[in-house]
Image 1 (spheres, helix red, strand yellow):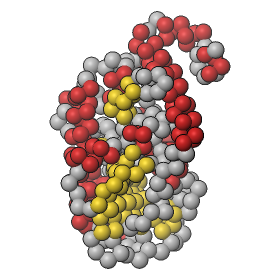
Image 2 (tube, one colour):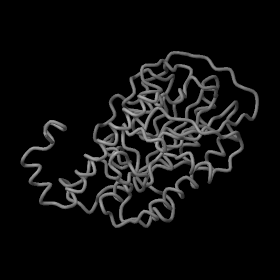
Image 3 (cartoon, rainbow, N blue to C red):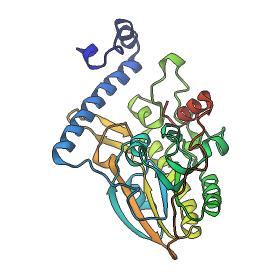
Image 4 (spheres, rainbow, N blue to C red):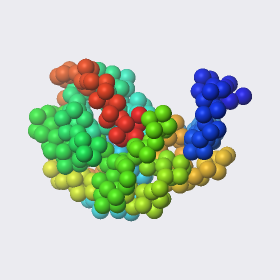
Length: 325
């Protein structure tokens, strides 16, 4: 029966290995439960017609500022930014699903994408007029991410270089690695450093660590998550005050913080792909208009969107540091 659900994964050898390791057994049971909950949610949403989500490209803005993995309720409670805030529904429960649903297959040649998110490498070449890939130029090896001040610097430079383009700016925070005082006390930033290579999970991160029995407790992880949002908000405010035209602050997806699933009532954390839970898809949409709207024009791409020759090892390293590989 198991082989029919996930063919090739549950071989006799792998099952024996899992049964000998309580931690791996816990992970596999959680993965199975999560799969059941995800499929159930997909069916329920389809029946209710609830999975449409906002088309961020069709929306009215000159600058779209994306906070990665930011829940609506967390943003509403902690952000004090000038503008009109409402709750909207994202098209994705993780970054790639968000990008695939909003960007892939479109010619967005009136838009420049400044991004610290590694899924940019999956987008087709020529999607945007230009891409400013901060994973190549502004990556911080020590913390395993791109810091928000680097995103601001590059966004302002891109605005000056492409004054007649829409600007899409993708911060990695509040997504881990956590940069605040609580997060920096963790033994690791999301990589299962205490496990042998063969025993590492497919998507190691602090959220799944709560499920897998990590030594870092729930309140510590939630505090680190809040700190990461607090850390990025002043930089978002700087862009709102600097960039011309109408700006929107939103998120690609939310983040589960212990909500129970259905029909298997396990506590869920992080942002599993394809799990269209309401609190995972609920994201902020803050509109701020400070001066005259700018004129934008579509022009052919100026260069390759993402470095097609980017070293595969470097890409994998970036993805692993952010918990995607």
